Image (tube, rainbow, N blue to C red; front, side, top):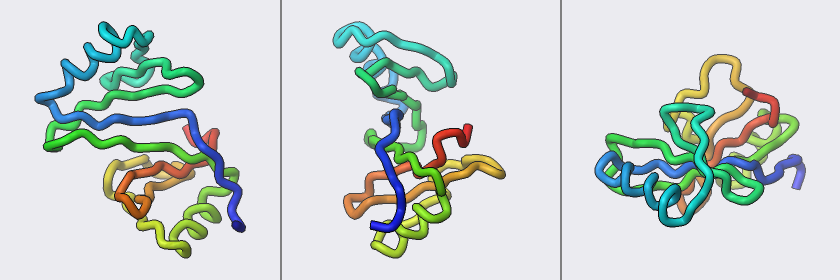
Length: 120
């Protein structure tokens, strides 16, 4: 492998509106995870060393899980991933001009944000 890629700390769950409130209540009230709202309107939960973000996704028919990968050089890592079959999908969510990262999908169509750790 030529690119330096590591697992990130963020997991995003994109949840349709009709399931959103019940999903948030499940993690908060049933599982008992500690919530935080650092990036409202998304609601986050402490999930061990990770952060689970529950995002309302009005146009979705079913939930999706998105993962994060860290790299010191996003251009190198994204190029490496593309050369090895990952599909770029930057249109899934706008990261803003100048963001040092991008979106890819793995062969099972799971979305991954590939970014430099200090990109935000």
